[in-house]
Length: 202
Image (cartoon, rainbow, N blue to C red; front, side, top):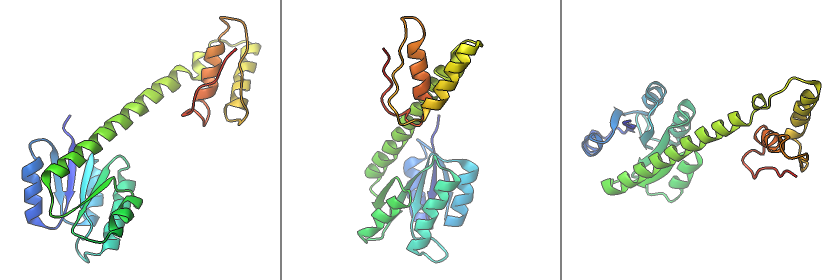
């Protein structure tokens, strides 16, 4: 799958340089202002956006910082990498606070840029894989995987629902082969603590 990169900069020379350097490895979309960048991000859903912070019409830092947040809201999975000639030490911190993944100053070092792009894409891959695995686990240990329609099993379901979001420690006890592990997993993966260690059974 070809990754898509949105390049947002009003410097046509830089646009051409980046296109020359990246066009063989990535699908590129280019524009020159922040307002259009948000619309393009919504339409194209790029993996990455290379975003200049000082864009027309006003070239103001505040507008550039706002563009970061607008792109992230329009396309939450897009990693925004900021590029600018701004020398202020505070600018990188403000950009990260607004949701930028990374930051580098002009003039652009293409080797450094490739490292940053590849690192961002790898993080996206890991996050997608984690999301996929979590969904598989949650589906495996959902209530639908505990088979039964009797009054007793419905009481078990109700108990699971009650304790799933409780802050109390839960210990599941029972004879071997009665489904303790399945109940423990159902509690764990239906709770807000599902990113923590699993429950114990006895």
